[in-house]
Image 1 (cartoon, helix red, strand yellow):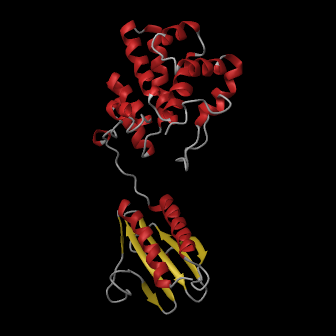
Image 2 (cartoon, rainbow, N blue to C red):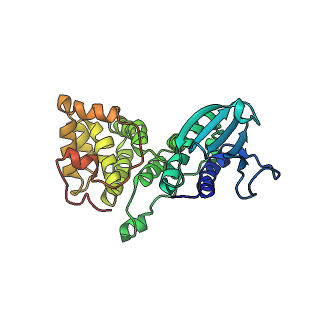
Image 3 (spheres, rainbow, N blue to C red):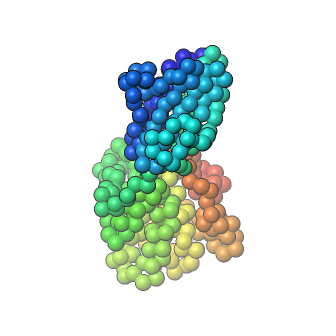
Amino acid sequence: MIEINEALGQIHKTLGEFCNLNDMQFRFDKQTMLSSALPVEQKENIYYMYMDGEAGTAIIEYDSGENKIKLLGSSDKNAAPEDCKQLSMWLLEPSVHDEKDVRSIANDFVETMESTFATAKTKDISQVKLPKAVSKNQAKSGVASYDAQTLCNRFVMLYPEYKDALKQNLLDYDELLAVDFAEKYIAPKMVEVLDGGDTKEQKKFFMMLNDVYEDGLNEVQDLIAVVIMSRMDNKPAYLEIADQYMSDYMKPTIHHINKLMEGSAGEKYRAKMKNPPAYKPPKKKSHGLMAKLMGGDQQGLNRQ
């Protein structure tokens, strides 16, 4: 059970966040609105909430007689309800529904408005700052473990020419999608270093991977072993170079993953990596792709 003003207030708050990000404002008329805190207009048994912006007008219409709440929209500015088309509709009966139901309605309205009223923001890569990485002191003291952001930051410290690519990744996904960056840039660079790098460069590159792996979270160990170092395709010449810098802790996993990825036997894994499902932020921690490939947990891989 929920009061109608409380329900509209909750919807107003959720939609307000969208409006702030997309240059829309709530229309407010002191003569007709219920209060300054809640910009809702009531005409007999129908309540209206108006939002205006460059992309047009969005209106919430709640009919207390039919217990229906609608999202209306028009590409025209300052449009009236009769000038709009229906974009979404839900049943809302205050005596039956609760805050959870209202939250679902509000979230649906936001998702619907995203496709109609969201304004494209100019993305200026020069304004992007890389998130702070875990320091070596933090990792070695056990205060924190290296994460995927640390790996990517370390990589662009070695190769500054990839810094803008990392910033673009952050812009494109509104957060770091490390698998995408590692697949596109770190793994190919590793092969390049193996093929044509001098001993000094090879040592710097693989010591960086070794260091992050040693004190890294599961996710960063997965990135290094599965996405990056599996690209060696179990070639003896490549592994011989890498073996010079990998720790005893790291070597068994890297050799095992490379055998899995070698030749036709690894094609199914390659296919999965090249065609991943649509990205969604993880809801909970798991043992990761590496543990699955190895058929279970490996000692030392569950450190969080």
